[in-house]
Image: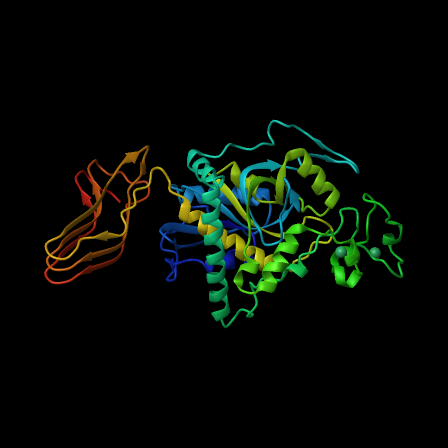
Length: 431
Ligand SMILES: [Zn+2]
Ligand SMILES: [Zn+2]
């Protein structure tokens, strides 16, 4: 998992089931890798989280290269966090807090922005790599109604779990990841600018149209301070629905919808409704963000980002924590559904009472100097005189590029059970 902002990183950490680095980073880093990592598991997946020191494509690409060096058996990288969204796509409203899942990434900014049009430098290299087979099968599931229902249901559950955990923290404000409410979800008409409106001595006075600038100060102030009028808000069916759910009470009023679509990734923050709508129409994208293009070229990647604004001039930070929370919840739901084709899952194992026998031995395979031998067992029950063996089984000589990973979560072995844990080397071991 890669995050670009602390708010994104904090949210995903609340959904870890276990951390492995509480006594220092036991998995280490390759030489020259300066990423900060957090390791642990979410559900039955082993997870490493990297928090980027800066936002943007180049940082993301550099972090991804290092990530791949230190963790050479990466199966999937999720870019989890917040994004700006296109408010209306294919006949439906996307609301703040909804989560966008990428099926492809389009780079924008590789060209020139003229006042009224955007000219692309080269069409061919802007549609980035196609997703891997594992990711394609995951995305295919998301295009089915059942897959989507499952994922949205689980996302809603994990969101509540995250909020409950945050509420118990003594450091965080009680309402840190709270749903701000549908009346705080404001979409202004695309041509309605965020600018000074009264007693103007600044350039806002001359700002009448879409392409004319506003002053620096206005850009920093909130809609409330500037007096952006609610009469210019767009009425949306999606907001009415959320309002109805909220008045009915219960937690379902905050449940995010998931949207699968193309994501626009660029090096500049999208802050213009007109520009947003032009790119959305031309490239068929549903969201804007800044790191996806950097990751997509380096690692097998899916973007999972919560909508925190409408990528227009009225954008604010108010929705960021909640959007980071919905994205983290959706990422955990996505991880539940992800099964890599080359992964052997041996957990949990039940030996049963009596004279049961469990062999959890994973065969080693050394290819191109890279070891591929991982054996994770979550729990083994073996009462009586069970015989339990956990470890990796190396047949060939092991010339080790990394190590042999062998982890057993918990083994219960009562009576006269015999438990062997470790690796068995048939050939010459070296580590
Ligand atoms: Zn002004
Ligand atoms: Zn405004």
